[in-house]
Image 1: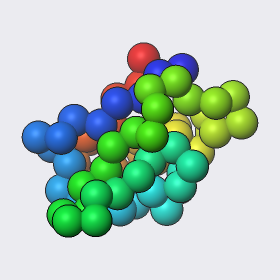
Image 2: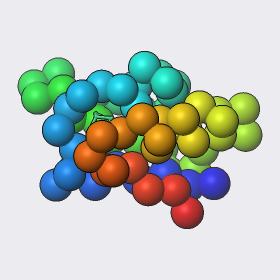
Image 3: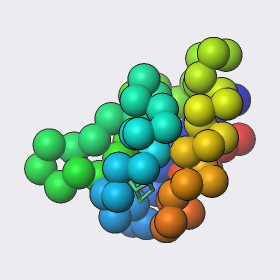
Length: 63
Ligand code: SF4
């Protein structure tokens, strides 16, 4: 599984990071999220699915 955050959609709600802090990192300047790495480790996939569900901006895509 791979994950990506659309920087145009992300509004920095931090919900994704609360679900998967090993997968997402937040900008210190604006709180916007990005993936630490595109490839999701096997033991983080459930957390990423929860993050996708939680994002109110639908900014996270998995593929
Ligand atoms: S939950 Fe969505 S909008 Fe909020 S920081 Fe994460 S990707 Fe951005």
